[in-house]
Image 1: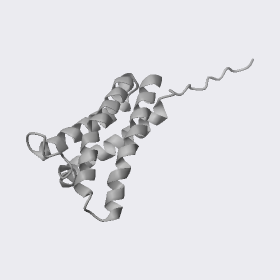
Image 2 (image 1 turned 180 degrees about the vertical axis):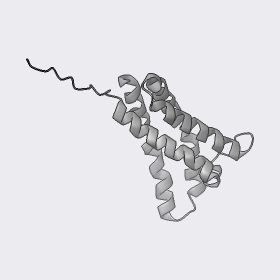
Image 3 (image 1 turned 90 degrees about the vertical axis):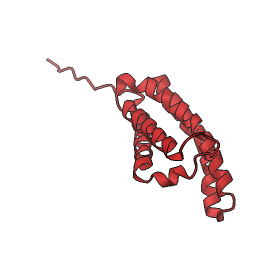
Length: 131
């Protein structure tokens, strides 16, 4: 008699989702641990306090990151992550504007953030498709 072994099939979206979750949970936590650095890149054109937007985006990042860890909420969370990455793009543009007179290494960091949004959005959409 031969034993039938079943290999647990891994969800194709699990590893990329966990990576996105780690990113969002980490950065979202930083919004509460060190909010001042995030307050400084909130566009002044937005109504209200920059700290409100810092905390609101931190809550969104931590919530989405947590939801990415759960298979049943992964698809919706991945779509929310893609939307969040698009929504924070104006903040990244503002960071470039604000840091343009800073030393070159800081300018490079600010500029590098802009194209990084593209793979982040596409990674989130890929997780959503495979969830």
